[in-house]
Image 1 (cartoon, rainbow, N blue to C red):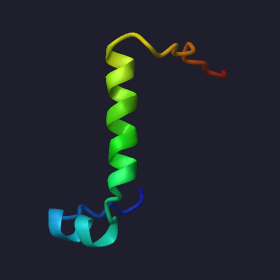
Image 2: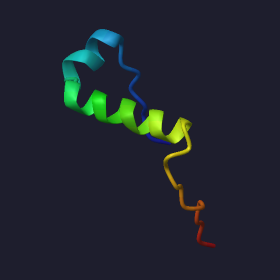
Image 3: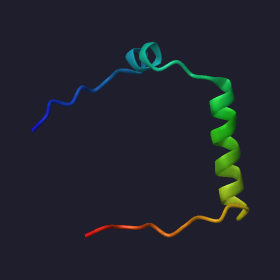
Image 4: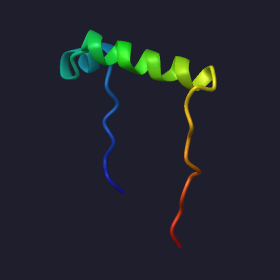
Length: 47
């Protein structure tokens, strides 16, 4: 089993910088999904 490192909030903030444009894009996507403006394809699985 691989080792899993649990990051603290401070480590995560240092490692993954936040981009306000990305946050705005994600917020917009969730808003449109919630309002029904997004057509989601069905989940596909392969045997």
